[in-house]
Length: 312
Image (cartoon, rainbow, N blue to C red; front, top):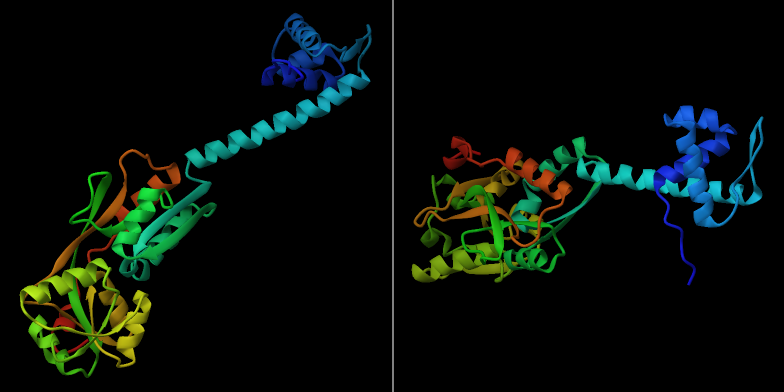
């Protein structure tokens, strides 16, 4: 095994500058060091590599063939170091890097796209990867390290997670404009019983909460159609397949799709939503920046008054 010489970047810069200037005097002035100090540095490097790098004369310093090879290598090493340190600074300043965010489907479909857009306006070189799924999938993504953080419901999460609260979301019922329940100021679980529901899978946190309260109230809900994507829920409601119970954050999307939203009352259900990440694993600078953007831009959705009474 070949033993590599122990050389510093300062020594490499000194050799490259002497070769470029062809003079110890000029190189010393450029490097802002004394000529004797530069001479000692060159001698130290030559001793370390075991070859003569320069031919000295009274008029000019000429680089030897071995010296030219060494200078080429030194320039490449210094260039690579500059790139690496620049990248490190950019990552530290949140200008480069990658962050993976796992989010429950309602968030990924509603507020998250706008927040991502605003985050990337100031950090266009950071790659963001968004994963969407149900509550359990989000926790698994963060726990396994697949995601830096998760956006999910945080009323009950394991102690291994740190939690940053974003607020609470009340549940609403979305339906086509001319649905019989659209004239109501609020909709109860009992009123939902006769109607077909478009629902998320059983393992979704929102579905489990709704089913739990329906069971306590002895109200048989009709989960007529189950879909795996939140956007599909809205499309099915718009097409008249059924109505849906959704978190409050989805209300603006429902209204923009020409649907009607009414608050769910008796019981008035809500869930705390927030950001989770592992206590034992710190956030990267880019992930910390995205968390700050989330906290700054998160909107507590309050449906307009006209959406709670007969109009849209």
